[in-house]
Amino acid sequence: MSSHVVFQLSLDQSDLSEAMAMAEVGVASGINVIEAGTILILAEGARNVLPALRKAYPNHPIVADVKCTDGVGPEFGVMFGYGANMATVMASASDASIRNAVAEAAKYPGCEVMVDTMGCSGHAGTDILAQVTASKRAHDLGAHYVVLHLGYDERNANRAMVDDNLLLKWAEAVAKANIGIPIQVVGGLTMAQAKVLPTFGINEIVISMNLGTTSVTAMDYDKITGFTVDLNDSGDRARVQSQISEFIKEVNGSRS
Image (cartoon, rainbow, N blue to C red; front, side):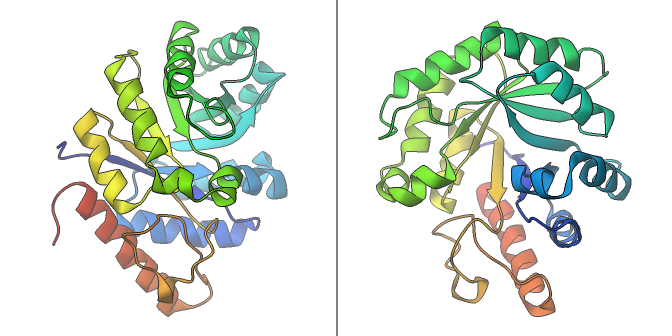
């Protein structure tokens, strides 16, 4: 197992002040990468969100999770211009869109394109080959990352998608395909699942925040990485910080 896994924290609040508070907790817990979630960018605007995160965390990579499908070049240009290091385009987008994203990223030194495979495996999530195909295509079109993503709506509509280890099945298959770019995994990972990923050679994991339905006081952190937290409660914030830190240590195989 790798001794270093990169952890990305998804800021899925709709209020910028709450997102900044969550980022503070995450960074204090050992998070490596900060993600401006889709709902945050939609609610508050990239013009407000990305410069605020860049100013507060100048040394942390920032992802703009905009899930673009068209007009990708101009949209990526906005994200990079406001301080994002990476942005997301959907695997379902056209070849032209993904190529335009890559061309736009090339104008901004160090900026990268992430291709999100959400929805590629059919309604049951069982078409594993489709994940491999989408990942290879992302590489061939010049993307820098592929993001294997079991969506919030689909996994909540069908809990068996998590319980049946679909993300691990996708991840193992894509890793074995040696696609040539880093693989990131997101979508309701349990701690047990996350700890398996480095054995496949996958060292990029996203922790989701405020998309779960379990309060932090009732949270069994072996169950799922997405959960709710009262950011106005210092006790909740302290517990979440401790839980994220412990999760990172567990996945890295170094329980304190």
